[in-house]
Amino acid sequence: MSDSALPRLDLDLPDTRRSVTHHVVIEDRDGSWSLFIIAGLFPSGAPAEIFLQVGKIGSPVRGLLDMVAILVSNALQWGVPLGELLAKLRDQNFAPQGPTSNPAIPQCASVPDYVAR
Image 1 (spheres, rainbow, N blue to C red):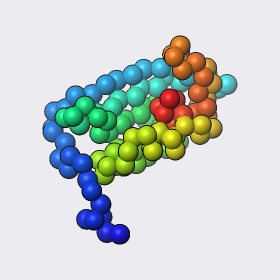
Image 2: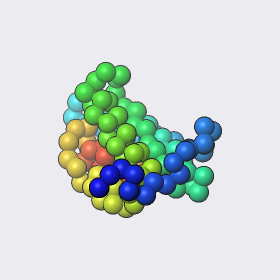
Image 3: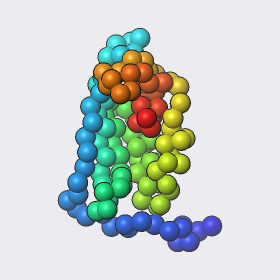
């Protein structure tokens, strides 16, 4: 199937758009990880893009999470239902993982798992 055959939502996001920022600390066996999740929104209020900031620029964890965020953002903009993406991210198990500073999500198996919850 060619890319042009796929339905795409809100092809052009406005230059200025609403977003939601969430901060959490994950206590891993190697120390504390401060995670910022920024979700840019379509004009309808639905998530359109995601940015994950954790660790130092250039670190393997930061690089891999940047790639996860890019893929999720592209999928959302191509119309993949949010629920399907979250189901794929939930229960992925890798570091950083452990107790969190968020009482609503006291434990996570990984950063993607936390995002999905």
